[in-house]
Amino acid sequence: MRKILTTVAMSAALFTAGAANAANIVESAEKAGKFGTLLAAAKAAGLADALAKGKNLTVFAPTDAAFAKLPKGTVESLLKPENKAKLAAILSYHVLPRTLTSRQLPHKAIHVRTIKSSGDRTLRVSKSSRGVTVDNANVVTANVRASNGVIHVIDKVLLPSR
Image 1 (cartoon, rainbow, N blue to C red):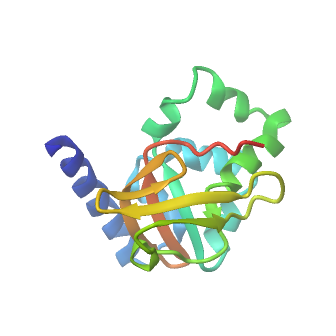
Image 2 (cartoon, rainbow, N blue to C red; image 1 turned 180 degrees about the vertical axis):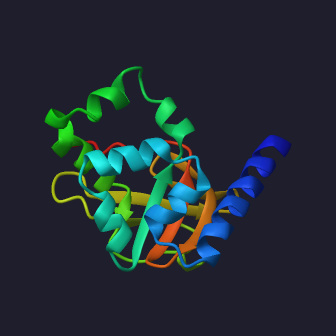
């Protein structure tokens, strides 16, 4: 438990510095230093500019450690140019077209629509006394403000069913 609290405190401290300078979502992630895989994937999928310039976005941001939990070779395969559409679908499943903070969530499960263009577009977000979960991921740092939205740090990569 102490390790988890330390990790959450460190995450909050890293993001607070970025948010204080009114950094956008991409700049905040860059400053945090633990979202290299997410940023590389966003660039490869052609989504980095949209995350930097879009308005009122919510991003459920998996850390590098979350990407490392995927089966070996998955990230490398997704970063190949021929998998750009698949990568974009996975990443867009992590983004809401509106700002949603944990304080806005009721103490029950709700379903929210992502910016993913087809197939599985809905995430199950649940708030309880134990915290916030998004599909099968835990929010480890919530409500990180950016100039163009909010970031919630998660411990797993969200994979749409289709």
